Length: 296
Image (spheres, helix red, strand yellow):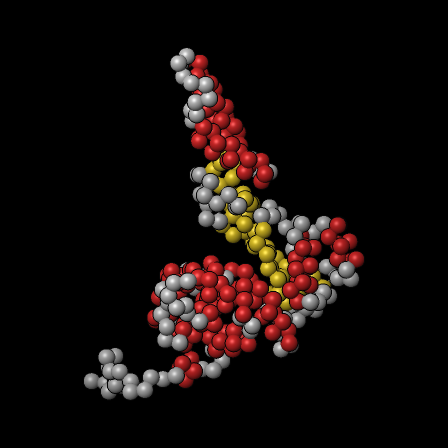
């Protein structure tokens, strides 16, 4: 029988190994830890004070968990909760704490704006370190499916038709009952609801909207239409995302100039060259880039 190395999973260590000894000092979780510790997190403090309830977790710890989760493609709070218990990188960043999925979700909801603002601060941190170089910037976009069902739609023609039917039915009921008091509210709540939906459609400029996520739009993606959003990013020549937007744009033609302006706003510097595919092309875009001294 072969002689195996000792194996006893129930045997506890006298002194648990430090995370760096197991993962190595260059592991991503330690980079996230150092970056967050170097950032100004004062914007996170006031919402935590106003949240009330039990004593909150340290915002630094919660932010590190979220950022590391994004980095390793763990996006849902339930999966984050699980990984905090099972994954050594998450356990190191949590410092032994075990926030549940609801706590993680509430933190993200309270601090959306502050987390977005950190994007600029981290970019400045990287640029001071000589990274996120803006000599050449590549811009692209993709469609992101929304939380919307194509089977549940608000359609302008249907709503207008239903609204007319309800008004006619209401008037008919009044005509058929001579004893009914004038001004009786028959079906007024439903009519008001239909009018609100119709107003939403008119303001959007669309003929149909999702009933579950009205901010989504019908976007063409690889020969088919999806209900969702357009995510746009700009990437530096050393592969850092230096600008990002989520829009309702149905095509990329009008996104080039706003994305270049977003790069300049986020990084405090204008790129020298911009790369983009033919979806971003127009003569107007070329003229705009030439006026800014940017090679497109």
